[in-house]
Image (cartoon, rainbow, N blue to C red; front, side):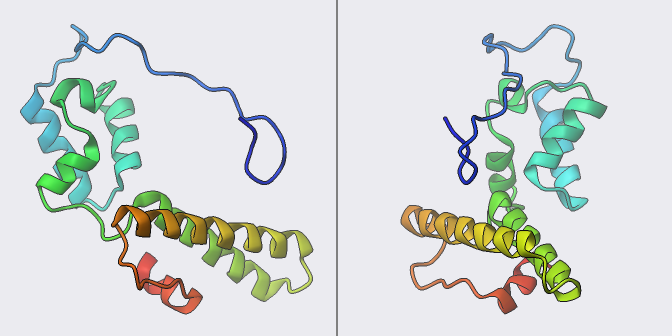
Length: 151
């Protein structure tokens, strides 16, 4: 499948192993992994960052294989899930950073195009989340309110 705005092919990457059983070398139990997820979420990490920390620091290859739940589901059960999804907030952060850059460098045409592309991605994702019921139907994206969402 091609990239969204550049007409290039996607990047190749590693894939998860097909085997869906807990590896013998993992020393953490289901409850220990869940407590680690909760501890890392309370420290202010999003679900993607929690997965990276668990993989790199604790040697947990996949939370879903061990706990039978995704990281997001564990956070929902503990009532620690964020108000907005992680991909949505990261796009908003990206747009805010581009806006700060454009305040300094007003004639940067590449950054202006990047701002347009990022805002269109945000609107497309907002439309999807409205359809799925994650965002309210009357929710509108406003660049001034975006800073409040991220902070």
